[in-house]
Image (cartoon, rainbow, N blue to C red; front, side):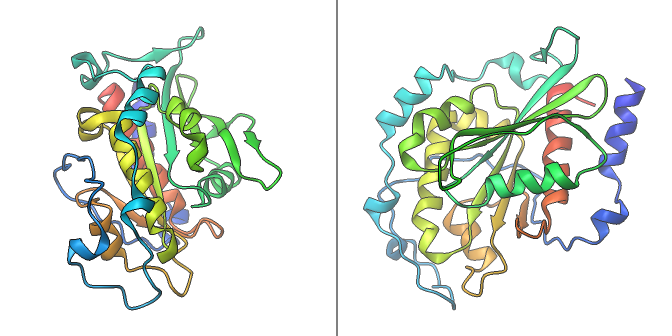
Length: 278
């Protein structure tokens, strides 16, 4: 256990590589309960100041997710209501035949928001962790059709199983199936104004599929990706629109790796503490 504590200490520390990455992480002392987004809300009814750059394209139809269908998909995936032992550190631990603890991390978000790009960058650049072979299942255009996966070993006793999901709406069943037994989430939103509908639909689907009981206790970090684009929406505007206040928020550029390491370290640390209680 002392080796695990030393590893946690390294995560909490600030490495030279970490210092080179600019971060405007936004967090609060208390995790706010994630709540199901009201599908009847439109941008005009939210009474928010419009962003200075780009045109926000959002409609009630575009952001609508069928609650009954999503709930049924979650039931098929055997995502059940959270049990008491699941929120008690050390009680609901998954182990393999070698006795290693497995912690599941999932990148979630709309299609082409940068989930696979981020996973590839982390696979290539995180040197402090031992990584297995990356598995990608994609179509001819490079879009994920089921999931991407890579096992990352913190030490001989702990393995992080890191997944991305297919963001296209037609892959809802496979996407929700990957959420089963998740221990930590990275929600990756697209900063382009024309993708706000997809961001809203994705976060709404996530909240319905997992339920507020799981989301209120689960470690979650937020990536607002593609911050290098000239028409990227303001950070505070996106946070309010997606109802993400109280969560750690990282402005990222996945193609350059900007802030990905800090974001990844945060979710690994939080998930490890949540599951084991160190």
